[in-house]
Amino acid sequence: MMSIHALRHSRLLVPRVRCLSSSVPTVKLFIDGKFVESKTKKWVDLYNPATNQLLSRVPCATQEEMNAAAESSQAAFRSWREISAMSRQQVMFKLQHLIKENMKKLAASITQEQGKTLADAEGDVLRGLQVVEHACSITSLQLGETLGSVSKDMDTYTFREPLGVCAGVTPFNFPAMIPLWMFPMALVCGNTCIMKPSEMDPGACMMLVQLAKEAGVPDGVLNVIHGQKEAVDFVCDHPYIRAISFVGSDRVGKYIYERGSANGKRVQSNLGAKNHGVILPDANKEHTINQLVGAAFGAAGQRCMALSTVIFVGKAKEWLPEIVERAKKLKVNEGTQPGADLGPLISPSAKQRVCELVQSGVAEGAKLMLDGRGVKVPGYEKGNFVGPTVLAEVKPDMKCYTEEIFGPVLVAMNVDSLDEAIEVINKNPYGNGTAIFTNSGAAARKFQNQVDVGQIGINVPIPVPLPMFSFTGSRGSFRGDTHFYGKQGVQFYTQVKTITSLWKQEDVSGAMPTVMPTLK
Image 1 (cartoon, rainbow, N blue to C red):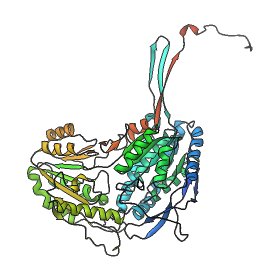
Image 2: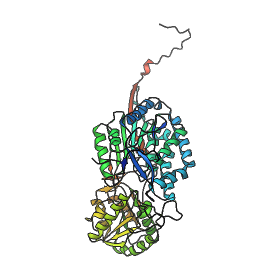
Image 3: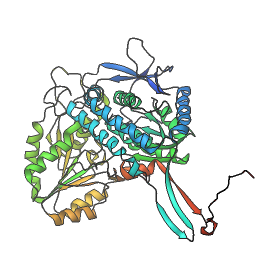
Image 4: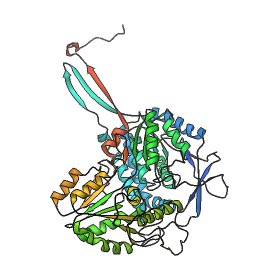
C-alpha cells in the first residue's frame, strides 16, 4: 500500500522522505510528557504551501519510539482513570482558557504550514475550542442510568467507564479543529490518547499538546507520534490501543476501519464527501449567492464540508453569471496578507490534481465559466495557488463530479424539479452534508425528509453541528457506529458497566448496639 497519512487525496499528496540535515529544524515527538528528538533515519519535508520553502522536517517515528508512547499511555491510564470527573473537568477549563490566550499563535502556525488565511485559521481553532468547552460539561455528559426496585430489594444502575488507550489520526486540512475533536473528549472521559497528526502540518497539534501539559494533563496521558504507513499500522495493531478516531481520505479511512476493526478496536472514520447545494428559484437571491460563494471557495475548497456542487432547480440557473462575477472578486493571496479570501492548496501535487480534474470536466463537455488555474500571486509565484473556478452544465457521470476535487472548484448542474435534485444527491455514494436554499417551508421539509445525507442545512451552506450535537456524516462518508463529539463522542470513548445489586430489607437490624465492638 502507498504511504498512508491523514490526507484527503493521499495518492497524490505524498511528502518527500529523506535523511536528516542538521540545518533544518525538526518536529519533536511528545512521549511521557516530554518533547523528544526522534532517532529515526526517515524524515518528511514540510513546506510552506504559499512559497514551497522548506520549513522543517517531520520524523517517521521508530518502532521503539511508538512502543514507548503506547507503554506510557497504558501506564498513565491506571492512575488517570481514577481521577475524579470534576478534576478532569478542571483540566478542560484550563485548556480552553489557554487556547483562547494562544489563538493567534495557533492561527499563525496553521497559516504557515497549511496555507489558509489567518481569519480562516482562527476559525479552525475556534471550532475546535468549542468542543473543548463542551467537554467541560463532562459531569453531565457521562452520567449513567438507574432504575430502582427492578425486583424486590433489587436495583440496577450503569456507569460509563473509559476504554483505555485511544488513538487519533488527523488530516492536513484542519490542523487544530480535528485534534480538538479527539483528544479532549478522550481525556475528559478518563482515557489516555496517542495522536498522530498529519505530517504535512503538525505544528498546531504540537502547540495544543504543550497547552494541554500546561493545563495539567499528567505525563503519559497524551502522547504524539509522527509517521506514515508504519505509524498507521502501529495504531491499528497495537494491543494497548482500544479505539481509533480518523478523519481523512477514503482509501486511508477504509483501511484503518477494516484493519482496526479486525483487531477488535472501536473505529470512527470520517471519509470523503461530495456536498450539494440545491437552489430553488424562490430563495433569497443575495443571501444564497453570498453563502454559496463562501462555502464553495473558502479555505481553497479544502474542506470535507465544502459545498462543491450546486444544483439549480428550474429558473434558478439564471443566477449562475452573478455567482461567477461574485467569485471573480475573491482575492487569492498568501494567508497573512490583508484582504486575502483564500490561500494556496497544500502541495504542488494537490494543485496538479485539481487542475487535471478541471480539465477533465472541459474534455467531457462541461462549460468552463471561470478558470482559476492560471492565477498569479505577486511575490508568491512558487505557491500552490488556484483561483475560484466554475464548471457549468456538469453531468453525473463526469469525473469532475464523481471525484472529490478538494479545491476551489464549483461544479454546477441543472434540473427541472426538486425531486430530480433529491434523486441526484441520493444516487451519489457520499452522505456528509447538503443544503437547500428556499423560502418554502414545505419544500425544505420535503428535502430534509427525503434526502439521504447525514447533515442538512436549510439556508445554511455548511451545516457542521455545534458540539452539543454530533458530526453525523453518513453512507460513503463514514465508517463506524458512533460519531464525533457531542453525546455520541462520549459514547465512543466510554463503555457501559451495568450493576445489579440485591440488599434484602429483612437483613436490616433494628437493634442499636450499646456495647464496645469486639473482633470475632
